[in-house]
Amino acid sequence: MRYVRSVVSWVAAFVVALGSLVLMPASFAMGSSVASGSFAPLELDHPVKPKPVIRAETVLSPRMRELEIDSPAMGGMTKVRVLLPAHFEDRATQEWPALMMLHGYNSSYEAWTTKKGVTTTKDNIAEVTAPYDVLVVMPDGGKSGFYSDWYNEGEGGPPAYETFHMEELPPLIEERYRGNGRWGIAGTSMGGFGAFSYAARHPEKFSFAVSLSGALHPGIYDPFSPFIVTRMQLPQDLDPLDVWGKPLYDEERWRGHSPMDLAPNLRHTPLFVSYGSGHPAPGAQKSDDMTVSGLVKVMGLEQVVGLMTKAFLQRAEVFELPVTVRYNEYGLHTGDFWNADMATWMPALMDLFAQPQQQPDSFSYRSAESEFSAWGWSFALDREDLAFTDVNIRFPDFDFTDLSLFSISATGDGMLSVVTPPLFTPGRTYALSGALESEIVASVQGRLSFSFSLGETAEKYGKGPNRVGPRSKALPARVVVTVV
Image 1 (cartoon, rainbow, N blue to C red):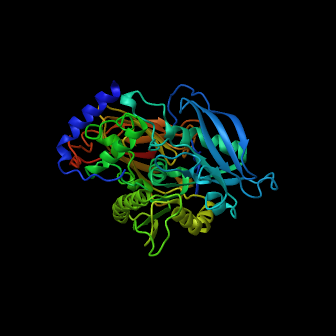
Image 2 (image 1 turned 180 degrees about the vertical axis):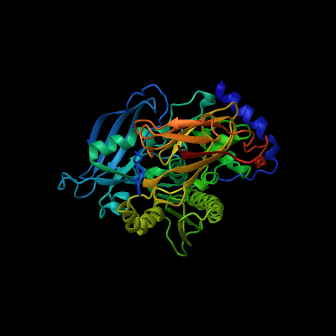
Image 3 (image 1 turned 90 degrees about the vertical axis):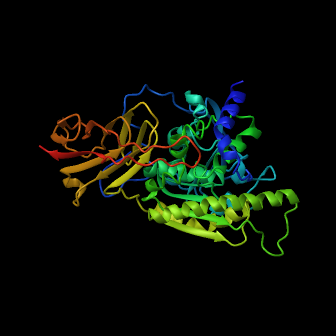
């Protein structure tokens, strides 16, 4: 069995770390601003993809709808719950921002709106969001899907959770429920990881990101992190290596989804982080449906994600990320605390929805993918080995409407192809230094397309746990674009 072979190979690769392992519980438009949630596709030559289709809509309450969606990315049917604004029916022409809520491990799309298996508005996100004009979108992320397009030994998805959540779902929601194109994202535990990972991999799409007791660094930094991710797959009878591959030999792929490694991408995204001590309040009564062992579990889980959150916050300080932190002195890994945190933050989140997301004048972006996009720029790599690509876009200090020059520098491996946003005068010729092309003509959309070699500049990793390889000492490859 492939599952058994994969487990054996993982154990063999990871045996060095086991001695010290600590077991723990498991559309871009250039200008002064751009609306978040534009979800522009990568401008590269790809075959036309089949589209997702809503097959059924069930009314669960005056505000709540449950959708059954036939998703190519998921390889079949998947479900999503949507909470409508209280005045949705009364305001027939109004458009609404959307808040994507991601659930945690061993849960489902029902988690935010279900208590004891019964759909209710008591003590859940329906009650928290009732006063606000916002669509609340709750997709399924699998019991341990980790909000990623699964590697599956190189074969790819399904399941492709990221493609479904980032590409297929938003247009369906916006068309059916009059979305205005502005999105925020929040999640608990594994969903907190998903919220920050999605925001880091797609920074132009979200007005903000919220982590509620999020597993913000399930990467390679500590030997137990891959063990935790693997341990979470086993009860689901899943191959633990299908998500991101072997942790010691596909390290860039693991790191390429981690908010810790992608922290520089979050410089322009308002972040909200909450976590607790893992201790109940003195004299607090255990709920009737929680056993003693269950109480111990939610205490331990909160302490583990607390360590991960503290590590991320240290990383955030280094990159000066815009983070708001809420620490619960008496906080467990339970929905009561998460709903209270969301209730506290909702006014600030709605204020962010009211402001167009600002397009950064210049930015940097980090990815381990062979194709990626950020802030309307598209990139593709021709390379042999897995490697991080770090791209830096720099403009002069003048208005974008008077754009006459920019530079792009990058480190990585192979040949990097670039497609710019529609910044330029269609049909005009521009000169390049450092690229394969010396001159290029802007397309009818005002885009430039060019390529350049990254040389020997890739970040290298060792084949072992917690071994961060050094960056090459070579200078980044650089291209400068000027008007002819």
